[in-house]
Amino acid sequence: MATTPAPFLSEAKLKETTAQLQDTLTELISLSLIGKQAHWNLRGPQFLEIHELLDVIVESTRNFYDDVAERAVALGTSVSGQASAVNQSGIKEIPIGFMKDLEAAKEVVNRMGQVITNIRQRMEESGKTDPVTQDLYIEILRTMEKQFWLLRSHTL
Image 1: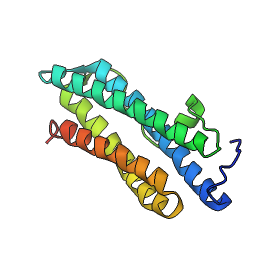
Image 2: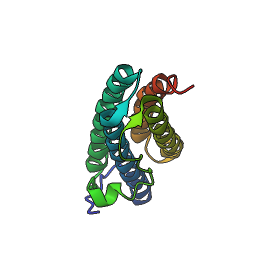
Image 3: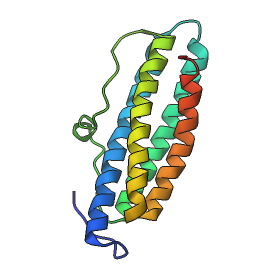
């Protein structure tokens, strides 16, 4: 990653913050792709409600990953949202093919939970390095945790 460091963070804080942002970016891109995969392929009596909820989750996730990428760039570091970077996100793909509505919801809930846990950890760490990035994580978590709750309610 190329850098043109922002003058308001030390080199160490910049490096740690932008590495966290890069990891968050690839996880959010992966989650949005997983959400769309589930959205297209679910079947069952709760199809419409889950289908529409997945659209909302995917749209907000896409907005979040744009915010995350722009934060990293504002700090002076380029980011990668290319397939090779996303493939290394650690977020496991869901099965290909049609899925029962509740099965698809469980698959997405599991991935969302993983991403939320990772962002929560980064939120804590970023409080020591860059409170502005921490604020971004708080904003993302506020929405993602509500969406997690709404989707998870179908799986209980």
